[in-house]
Image (cartoon, rainbow over all chains, first blue to last red; front, top):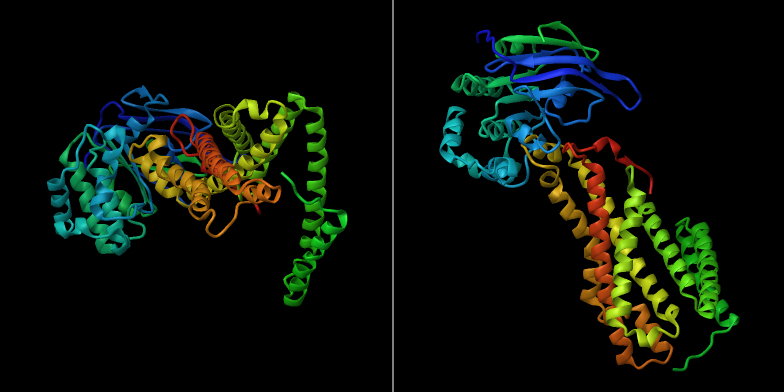
Length: 228
Length: 267
């Protein structure tokens, strides 16, 4: 992947967050992601990587700092719409009871995706690239392996066409083969549109190198290396 | 109406029946003796106190005293509803008290204006208002405590699912709605179940009391039907308000789920 120099798409300014006991979890962390960029966030366990990702998705209250999308601050009412453009995929795939199809259709019930529709043909194409046929859509969630669940959770996010994808250790619980398939899927999604961006939290340095064109290193809730 | 006055001796004989419970506890090593003793004493003391309070209020016949007692009863019901739950979050007490107050007062006002003609109770409002309020509150607090506990339990144990919905662009209401609906359903199920079997497997307390006091069975039945509907309405309103107020406390205006504010306590 190549370096891209454009105005930031998603920007976090001096994010600060504390634990209940007053410990600083994020200490003035700033980050800017340009269109087309893939940024890896690396660091030791407890460095604040996942918390930073959650803060970028506006999932938790923060003590101070701000997040902008295309230079615009996000109002309270604008948060669901923001999250439809900046989609966070949890480390542990969260699926509801039912079939794969029902899970993929779930987001279209939300007001922020009212304009969109479930496009089965493109989903089937993605599934085929992962070695699954259209019958996979009718599988029940209880019958899926961990890797298959992660694939469903990823496709559910990708089909929404987000501007920024926030990925929290997307392959940490997967076998090498499925990990490689997931990486291929993500690279393919990025290459389909040059304005898409991705932030990936990983403890795997080689994955960080493979999947990103910029790396940010966190430790103790602070940026200690890379180019934020 | 006519009924047989119970003497202190009669009540004492009934109290001796509790010895059966004590004997079972001792024989099977249930360890319930202390709790049984306290419960027995509390039953006698609480009901005697209530008797004296009601006697005074019936004698005073002043609406301020009646309203004051009903306010105290509602506040205690609101507090008791939370004390029965295993979860706490900031504002839960106020949510519960508000929900109990709103639901029970709406229902009692409807009962005393639309159902039971004011001409029937105007000479002694306490005779109608306080027993009706007591029955509505007892059931409403049960619904509220079940609903609040279910809401906290589900939101905590299924936090990942709640956040998944938020992550995919759901509003706080869209994210919480399935869990809010489950909580309200849980609070309302007991009263619906009671309505299903009332008169078949159980004779309701109020109806039994009226019959013992000499009322015609069909008159007692009519009262019981009315009270079942009042209780059902109070439970539905109370549970729904408490759960919705809880939802507003647990999801902020930025559509964030404040999972960290839910604390588990020993019940």
